[in-house]
Length: 278
Length: 319
Image (cartoon, rainbow over all chains, first blue to last red; front, side, top):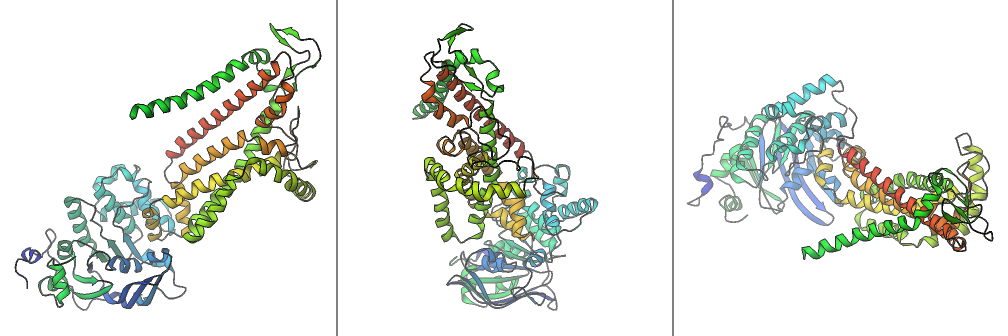
């Protein structure tokens, strides 16, 4: 262990809701990646990535820029399909089902695997219309009364109900940055996904808004399975149950977060979390 | 530097005002002579060229002179309307195709050809229409349309020589499609990917994403390009002159009828008007130009109003 390690000097427990205990090892595996290679044309960005995500846990993906963690995240709901020349090799299963199997339904996959992006990206519609977008796209909750209920439930779940309930018809773009990001979370929750992917969800937010998103992630864990890409190691330490360290397209180490930040098994992990590079 | 910019901007505005003012002054005696009849009558007659000029309302005019341009207004507006109605949907579809459906490398090439279409001089379009399109339409297309679509209003009846309203509208549409396509394509390509990704990640199909998020985001570009296209079609002179049939004092009875437009009429009548010793015919043509400017301003204002109204609508997705 390196002396003077800043992360180790910090309390590892999450600040607000009681520290999440290590998840019971017997929980069901929801996402299972086996030897995933990923290419943009001839350029390979993921090399034999294998990891699993368990139900109701938060898995943090950390690693330096360009290490492939976002690419991996975006392959979980096949958002990479949009990029010309993107190609995946290996096996990526969600609930046991190969999501890259020929003929597998991308739309249904994205309904089950929600995503929150690095930059909050609310539609230029009203708050309410943002939340109901996924319902309309997927033809869910078609009776007007149902939609009202979904809007309230989703905004409550995203911690935006108190601030938003009187402005449902107001443009979403009038919200603050942190509120917009919580609206994007509410929008993703409205269609009741099983899994929520978060791509550096707080990197563009101030510390207070960041703390709210982190609290929210810990609450959401009760009902959803979360995979969070973050550059912020303290954030990973505060909220995640397990952490995967990516380096140059490979998973170097996946371990319970507390263990990784106190006793990393691999030298590169230690070098990264102690700030020798990255 | 700011002052230089301000002065240049003021100069541009001043030139515009000066041109309109010049036409207003030039046309003033004709405006007084013609009154509202200028807009509501459809007979244009410069009078008896070799008759002695007579005094009417204190102005010297040739005997029998009468200036009414309703047929020009109708011809201009109808041919422009046909062109815009055809060109905007085609242009937008082409833009979607270029922005979304083909690889970026190919997009550059196809876009290049689309934009070359806009660079072709209008007289070339006119000549192509004259040599190829008109005989083709008159022999093969218009008779078929009249026979099979004749139940629609204004689609039946005599199909004529091929010179006329629909031919003008088609050629004008061809000329303005590139304007719409390149503007909307640029707007689609320039859109941040965040909104598109958000919609797709919520389980929207690509078509739904286009319809509900991407295209609404280009509304301003679409309306703007439609304004530009309308302006171009209203003012197009040479191509229309060669294919419209140059109808004089004749209101179209169906979409095959010969027409004239204000812009092409000014060209075709200028030579004759210069023979008028009283000068009133040229003043009346200046009045035509003034009306054309006025129509352009009104169309632009309407389009701007439309933009304002569109901005107040948020979602494109009905419940």
